[in-house]
Length: 101
Image 1 (cartoon, rainbow, N blue to C red):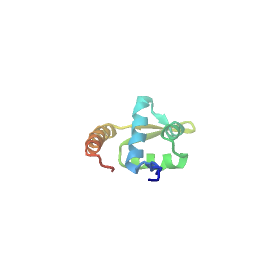
Image 2 (cartoon, helix red, strand yellow; image 1 turned 120 degrees about the vertical axis):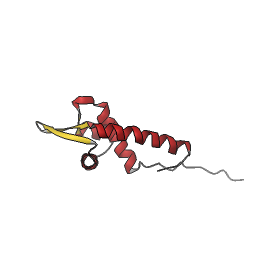
Image 3 (cartoon, helix red, strand yellow; image 1 turned 180 degrees about the horizontal axis):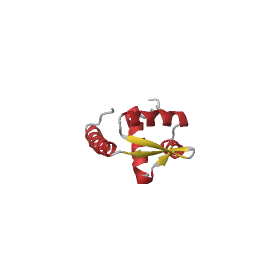
Image 4 (cartoon, helix red, strand yellow; image 1 turned 90 degrees about the horizontal axis):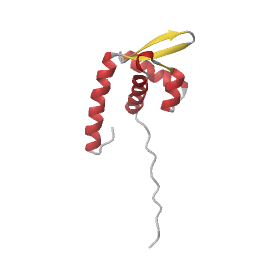
C-alpha cells in the first residue's frame, strides 16, 4: 500500500465572512471608530479591498464614515450592531450543521 499525502485545501474567506470581520473590527473600535489602515491590517486586506467592503457596509447603513483630517473614521450604526448579532446567530446554526456559506 502506498502512503498518500493529504493536503489540506486552503479555505478562502467568503465575502460575507470578510464583511462580518470588518464589522467586528469596527465594533471593537467603539465610539471612537477605526481608520481604514487599521481595518486593513487587522482584516488582512489591501487598502482598496477594505475601502470597497466598507462602502458596501455604508450602503447597507451598517456603518457610518466621518472624515477627520486626512483619515476616514468608520463607526458602526445601531442597525449594524443588530445585524451583526443576528449574523452571529446564523453562523452558529450553520456551524452546527457543518455547512459552508
